Image 1 (cartoon, rainbow, N blue to C red):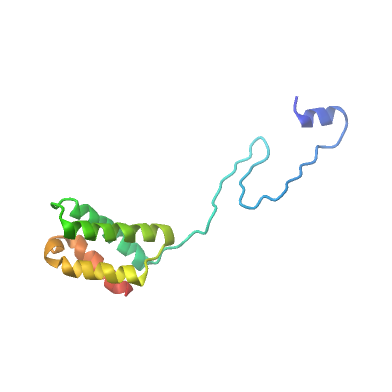
Image 2 (image 1 turned 90 degrees about the vertical axis):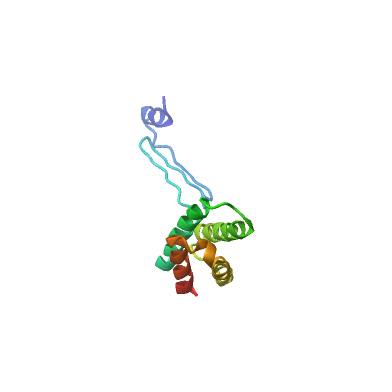
Length: 128
């Protein structure tokens, strides 16, 4: 028997529910209740940053097809950092954009085979 049934049977009013500080909490009350948590700020990514994110993913995938060397490893690491930064913050810092631009310029012959490299270079230039 539930507390409500017990209260109804005894002719008492419904039991009171008291909640303390619930900031940062997710809860649901009742037999058909549904709780959904969306903590933290939602970020809307700038379309230019989203274009960069897509290009970064494509270029990283293309780089995986090449025999790795110091240049590809350095470029991939910077691309991974940019992707992580965009995923976490919805933006990318000017410093990282400058490093990406320099690495793409230095690796032009290497990545010139990939259309994804041109897409990333264009997205970087658009954000600087």
